Image (cartoon, rainbow, N blue to C red):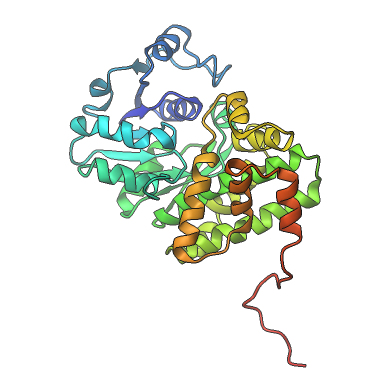
Length: 338
């Protein structure tokens, strides 16, 4: 169908490469780490990050970025969000007009407050940029368990092209023009998942988790709507859908890091233990900066920042959230006159 390169050979990039190959696409996978590429060539499996998922013999693995990028119709950018700008800058000399870059990482750049697609468009103006996200842990996608995601782009034809190369009987892809809403949902939910993990680490129950998820989507929606995103997006797969799976799943690195912090680990100790990039840590500060810029109240995300960066204990943060001033749940609903 298409000639595709996956830029980034972590668990998510590897899982998506397998989906693309299953659909008949010609697939090349790139990593900056030569030892990772050698492992993939020899083992046909990412033994560290996606063990048990076998990769086909005709899938190409390379650490030569020019080889990976040149001549491909689609470039799936799957490096962690903190490495997006540097990787895009390195890709730029090899990208030609008409190539589509599909951003699949989730995050907000801390220094500029730009979304991942904004960063890529800034560094690679020649490319058409799309995003793809939704409730989709790599461990399940790699094993072929049914999953649904959303492909987003400003132009319908670009989103539908991404839909065509990825969609099959176990990987369903919807389309959306609300790229901003998709990216904000995918980024902010990681911060809420840290909070949910902290609650688990503290030994709290289902009531606490349900409250965090519900009030978390309210915070995400308030900020995203103020920034121009659509409410439907935050109520869909890339908002509440992604939030639920990230707060609940045993595969979630954000939830796991939060659990460790709830058990008394420092933020750095938790990240070291998880051994993977915990995107919510990087998005937390950016979310607070955006909330201040747009005048939006986000108490759960603010509390996560205080635990991560200001030395507050997770238990004290929960207590303060519970003791906030009394409020109505929905301020826009009208009361009957007394």
